[in-house]
Image 1 (cartoon, one colour):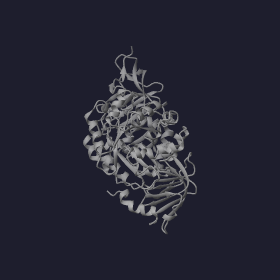
Image 2 (cartoon, rainbow, N blue to C red; image 1 turned 30 degrees about the vertical axis):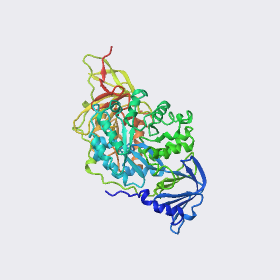
Image 3 (cartoon, helix red, strand yellow; image 1 turned 180 degrees about the vertical axis):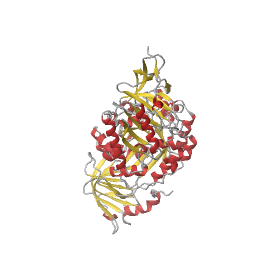
Image 4 (cartoon, one colour; image 1 turned 30 degrees about the horizontal axis):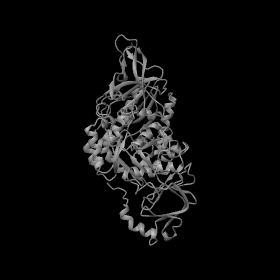
Length: 600
């Protein structure tokens, strides 16, 4: 495997010193811009940046002494010179793209560093899948750091994954060149209860001197939260309110505030800084999950920074949260996150510090995008056949696979129903009376069926339940092999025949997302790599994703980015109610519960 080699600071220090002193010529000089200094939180006009060997050599009012006959000159023309943006926590697979195509999509938006947790592919392909993501990440012209996934399965005993990640896997991965730390520790009950496997993974990471990612999806900020922090996670992105953000930084964590395609958790938490006055250096911005449509049409970390500014955060503080704060958190303050000597030369030129138009992007000392168009290659890995053949149902599904038998002699029944909450990862645990028709429990009103179809081991297993909140009407079904985190197949529908059609279609194409109405396919996104990603360009995937959104709307769903809610309905570590291949899970108690209850 050949990676895009990038020289270390010690290896380049002699040349950086010589360029800064004027003894050697720079490779590039950015001339006449406003230096956005995130260390001092200042904007300094009429400054130049001299770059050599992909790193910053000199920043000052006049870099004339660094010029030579071969020096490339970039005229800033009075624009802001901003550090390249960093995404502190994200899952590339959520973009439905490979690392190469994800990089191609976000580079024009000014993202030059990403901290990725490939736990989606870990659930499907195990350590081999993580290695494939890691390897393609290192081939890119920007900085993609990989966190070794910690929890596959995310909740042992409550779901079955294609592969399990072990403490030995974590220890092995810590020696890989692109591994920056441990991915989000979703099994927070395991940490709280001192589970030896979870603690061994954390210990292996800490012994390697790397960062342990957190995921505390509970409103309890008492002793359980304290126990979780004591276990070692250094950050958390699951906060949804100001109290969550405050609790995390008070306990020495970094509060990661996310704005993804469907998670809007910045506005409700940033008041800890803007109103309560907490030290902003302990807050970090991230996306967590962004699908391709958001990346192509709305942006990436530039979108998050603009949103934070719109929520009354001063621009320089918002930029700190998306640059220096992230670098500091991962121990990379001397590598990325600011435009200062020795750091990688990741620079954005923008004419406005509030609206943040991304006009020129420089990464590692070369222009990689201008005015929304990428100008460099993003190399692809040769993904093996094993990664492209991951949907194994065991048999062709029929409507009977989705039947929910009623108790004998009943006319109606009470069901535990998953309640979707718009723009939020948590769900509600609802109880709803449902009718019985010819011995089968049927959805009614806004309640439709949901099924989790096993797809890793060809067991033929189907778990059936009910979900509310999508607003679907008519005879329809939507199926997806993106089903965080176990990534079986989620099927939601109002008609069992349509559910079977949708499920079988995804088996035929090797994974993806499809929507059927009245036996006609309205939309299809093929995701042949692990059933999670496409190696097609982001624009093509985004166009198909837009057709998916339109198809969901045509079937009655008006929720914002409802696909993200659909894909998370099997995530058995976020309250309140989820579905898994083992049954219905109450995440408040981490116990399986019955789907149906007798009426009193």
